[in-house]
Image (cartoon, rainbow, N blue to C red):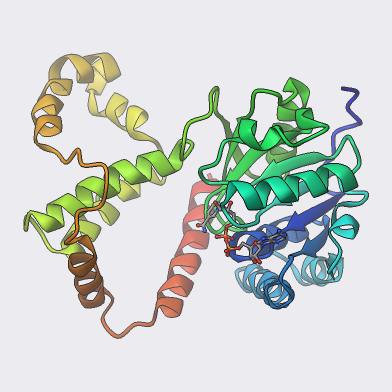
Length: 320
Ligand SMILES: NC(=O)c1ccc[n+]([C@@H]2O[C@H](COP(=O)([O-])OP(=O)(O)OC[C@H]3O[C@@H](n4cnc5c(N)ncnc54)[C@H](O)[C@@H]3O)[C@@H](O)[C@H]2O)c1
């Protein structure tokens, strides 16, 4: 497929299809980078609420000095809302599909986008767990589609997981990667499709063990959360487990770590949870444990605190 000149961070239009939690946040992200954003959702009230949330996120970025006054005004002016999918994706360079996580819903939307978008527009799906190869089966131009899975909230978290399907054109993957990099995202590329991509699988592995420690009575919900957040979590904001253990191996690095410490993990793995569906008692244990941990602080206040700290962390990480 003939590819046009790659879009840089100051040109092109983005069509957002589905303006729920993720679509609205993507809208703020792209608008904050100076791109024209057209928002569409099949549900009128979700559409309105989505635009409001996009504006709220842009205001947050301005308050956090991640967007100056001029950039903010431009971003607000660049966001349009439409009740017509064809209008949202018409003339777009990239469409960020963010509708409900169901094959029937996404396939229907993929068909519509495929018909209405320019043939060289990239169709990027936010899907957390569906296979792009399956979604491609309904497309006339499957080569231009891939998964671009964000980590919530996309207007703050740098990670985007790129997953090509069986029919994704290699140049489309390369163009999407270059685009996200030019916009300040940190893309990772999966060489094969697996449910949950990379980051959600890692989260699922840790969460299973975290739940199991609570259910076995080893520690409270609050202490399990604390052990992760103020221990490994601080290092994990900077580097992944392999680099961490490379440093843990001293001068011998990862080789020394595997040879001398790695074996001690065998006993842990043998003792750890391996169940594949949530035990029945999970809900009661987690609901009461989280209630105790959160106290009277409303979730919205905790989310605000989290987002402000994420911004400070990102500034610290990128300031060297
Ligand atoms: N929630 C997360 O933390 C998270 C993180 C990363 C990726 N994702 C992925 O992002 C996607 C959206 O998730 P969400 O959490 O924003 O869901 P959501 O329920 O908040 O939003 C989905 C939106 O899609 C709209 N929609 C449904 N059918 C539609 C159609 N036919 N045409 C247009 N719009 C339609 C709904 O009205 C709704 O506003 C999913 O694929 C999900 O896997 C979610």
